[in-house]
Length: 94
Image (tube, rainbow, N blue to C red):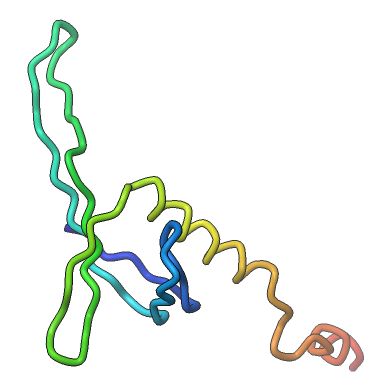
């Protein structure tokens, strides 16, 4: 299990549901298989564990959609303007 963090509200895949920013647990189930080149790990499922008012709910999602949502969240952080865009100017004028 791993924890992922979203800084902004987000959607996963084609779902219309907007999930709030925050930390989410992700459970990945893999199966190990022996192959000619050694052991191969095959991802069987990826589950996003969503906190709710009464506990949590689980939503199975394609791993690629989760990675896309994380990348979009990261890109939005880089694109957003600073809270104080004039800070650099005022700091350098002394």
